[in-house]
Image 1 (cartoon, rainbow, N blue to C red):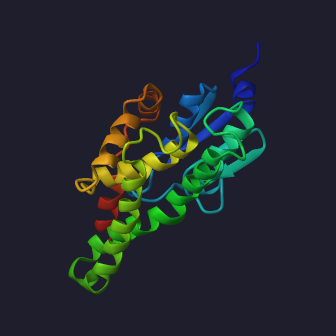
Image 2: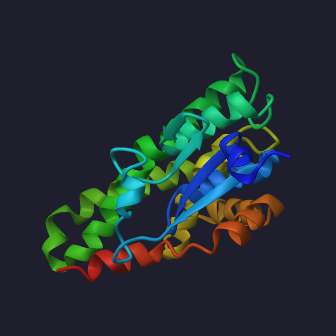
Length: 226
């Protein structure tokens, strides 16, 4: 029989940092039904990744996977890598199709555009009255990006076509994070979409294996710092 250490060396390891984007990757692995190992990491001071996580990849940011001798970082890159190398054609539209073009755009839209105003909104909240000069600008960008997603997902169950793709796994994280901060009241399509994603058995299995994630805890950590 192959020993445990050898078996884990032959499968993907998800380096799972609590309260982080790495939940996306657990969900991806569960949707694909792949064998994988989980290496768990706790944050320092509720906020920072520990030194051993930073040794995986120079930025020390989640998610990170290892696959044999490969180290892959960044949510979008990991999702695309796993789907292409291990997915057997699942969870993405046919290359060159119109749906594939939409898929690629959404894969890059979330972290490339939507997350920036969302994170800036957290910083603005922390600033309190000192943030007043940029309040209109930041909230205008939040409304622009979430309004775009609301229109695009109105009447749709998935980002692309009629089935789950990696773009949904990428997109659901920021929608969920916004929900936890009470930001989705003006966006009924996004609330409906999030409920559909959270009801998926693979999503629930990922929570069971990785632990419930309190994304708002990060905001509290920042506010508690000097």
